[in-house]
Each structure stands twice: as structure tokens, then as C-alpha cells.
Length: 439
Image (tube, rainbow, N blue to C red; front, top):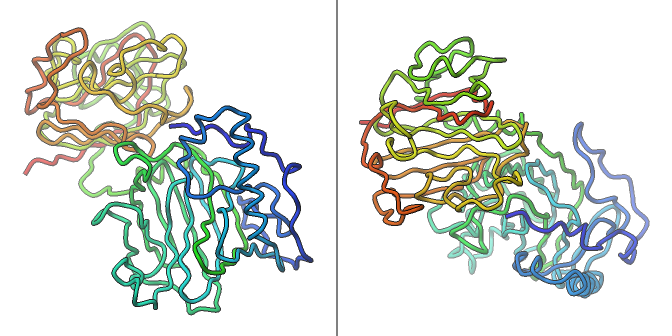
């Protein structure tokens, strides 16, 4: 879900009253980073409590501006700037960036007091937790494990608890490094990795992925907290793809050598190798598939669509017929937001098991940019992760309603090849690797 940009809702620096005192020199941002806090006043920030951002987006522009103005006025009663530090007295609305971010790296220092409880909302979603790790009354909530975990993740989920307790003693400054690509979130506290590429769950709707973009919020929670050296670096697509691909690589083997179609079968004459990628020839199509067969497997790849581009991933195909029906399924590869696709069935958009299960939308990069995708197939289940966000989790054995009431006889296949299902557009694929999950 792309949240409505708060900057577009009339929240501008000129509308914020200035709260400041004489500031001292603060740290310079590291190379590639820029400051989110100017060390002097609250320019670039507004107030908002714990509030579902989808409800804010539903408001009229006038109502939204009025509501944010009220929250910001409340924030100004409780936030101040002292010696290049943002200071909150433990009360009032949270402080929220006017800007929204998608893939980024955040650096931020904090110092708090005994019995305080705070955190950092990412994309308006709670939260990277900050604890008093000595407060025994909150040990049952996990305070003894230390700060930095994704506390609002489900019990037992990756990232909910920090891997190590890395908090410094009270009175000392703590430093976070937080990296978020899609829903994939990594947290370092005082140089120790406490969360490693965990999926941050969507607190506001557990059935949906985390919002594609959103603001950063500094929580207030009953005790004074100070923040300083707040810097951000937005991560470009190529780097984001490289980071995502570098996670969990054991057992994956490349199935494309980047030079020719050795190891591939089917419609080889309708595809070509261009700049280290497999590209469907314009006006051509058909199934290009691996010579090797797979039962349960995971595949990592990158793809690029031209504007309006259409292709697909053939899952457990025998190389014959239409993979949407005659293979286990065809996972759509589509420039979903192109105007010509405005009125498709939900089960036809990118990442969907064509005609059977609809994927979540809003997580594709613009046409002409490389996207990163992982697909995991186990038995009758399929999981699709796009640019760090899970957009499809489905069990095809439980699908009983089909688009146009057309049956999918191939969905019962338990093994087959992996391939690409061309539909006449010059869609490209690269860095294709597969791991067999069969015992």
C-alpha cells in the first residue's frame, strides 16, 4: 500500500512553529547520508500519535490538514531542542517525518532514563523497541532481552526479540543503524546486529505486507528521551537487489551462465541473451524452461519489464500448452500499473498465480528498473517475495474458484521444469539461481 505523501498534504516547514535553543555543533552525516534533523528546530517534522495511517489517508485534504495541525500543536508542548538534541518529556504526540521512505538506511542516537519505554516506527508501523532492560516488572514483555527488536512482530516470529542485548548503561548514548528494504529489516545497536533481515509485520493488518513506503516516527512513552545525529540514506534499486540476493544463499545454484542458453529448453529461438540477461524477443513468446526438473524448490531472480511488459514464471511445467493452465501455475510478471491493465481481474496482476490467487499490489518498481523476486514452491504451496515484501502466500490445493470458471488441470503437478512464459514483450531476467528443497 502506498501511503499518501504527508508532504503533499500541505505539511510544510513554514507551517511549523519554531522550538529551539542555542544549538551546539553536531556530528556531520557520513558519506551518502543526509540529516533528517537540522539540530535547531522541528522543521521537517510534524506530530501524530499511535494512529492507523490508512485512516489518515482516507480523510479529505482539509480534514487531514486540520488533524495534523492539532497533533503538531500537541507535539510542540512536549518536544524541544537543546544542544542539537531532540528532547521529549515522555508525553504528547510522536514526532513524525514529513517525508516518506521506501528502501533506506537510518542512523540515529538516543539516550533515555530508567523505566522509560520508547521506540521507532518504520513506515508508520510499530516498532524498533527501546527498553529499560533492568526493569523487572517488564521482563515478562521482553525488556530483559534488550532494545532493538521488532516488538510488534508475532510471538516467535523472526526479529521480535533482539539476538543479543547491546544496550549501554543509562546516561550513555546508544546508536542505532536500521536498514529496511521492503519489509526486510535489519537493526544494529551499538555496533551489534540484533535483527538480521527479518520481515517486519504490518501491525495495522497482519494479513497484508508492510506498507511500501511511509514516514519514520519517534515514539514517546512516559519517560524523557533524547535523540541526535539523525541521518538517512535512501538505497537505490541495484544495491537493494544485491542486499536481498545476498541473504540465505546456501544451496542455490545458478541456472543461467549469463552468456548463452545452455541448460535451457523449449522456445530457445524466441529468447536471446543481452547484457547478461535472458530477454524474450519482441513479438515472440512461448515457454523457455530449464532442462532440469524440480519438485519442491526455491528460485531467486531479477526481472525488468518495459512499459506495459508482460511475461510469466512457469512453475512445474512440462513445456507444453499454456503454463497458466497446463503447468502447476504461471506466476505473472507484469507492469501492473500501466494504464492498459487498469481493469484486469485481481488474479492477473504481477506475482499472482494466474487466474487462481491474487498477489498484493504496489510493490513493483517503475518499468525499466530491475526488480528482485524470490519464489518458494513446497507441495501445493507457493510464496512470492518481491523487493523484500511477501506479496503472495497461497495453497493451490485449496483454490476452488477460478477466473472465468476455467479449470487449471496442471495445478496438481508435483514436479516439472522452471521457466519463463513469454507473451511478445521484451521482458528480461538475470541472476537466476535455484535451490532444490526435495529431501
